[in-house]
Length: 73
Length: 73
Image (cartoon, rainbow over all chains, first blue to last red; front, side, top):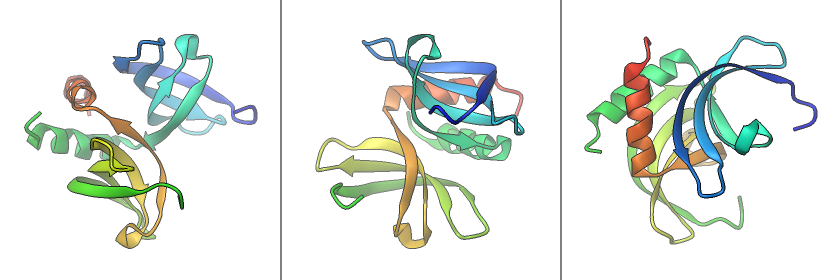
């Protein structure tokens, strides 16, 4: 990810942690100085490395929240 | 994705749709005939192509739901 600049604006929450210390996190991240987006992905300890993930808008988070609240989890 | 076999067991919900018809979806997917996992990613129309995404366990979905319900969305 050498060519991508990013700044974690807010660590919204940690969803899980693996035995090797990787964490699945919801963050608010600004990529390449652009407007910050919500981001769901796995991170190595200390945010040293990142795995694939997805970005979501606030509207998408709302829709996801509503779907999750409708599920029998 | 030629080497990856998958089966969409359940389309749980659609989170958004882009102007080009790509949809961000939460699905229950079995990858390579293994136990199905929840999966959040973008799909081209008719599920013809998939973008990067993440898989989540049921426990992770619960944690994500709780985080989203705590947010001021």
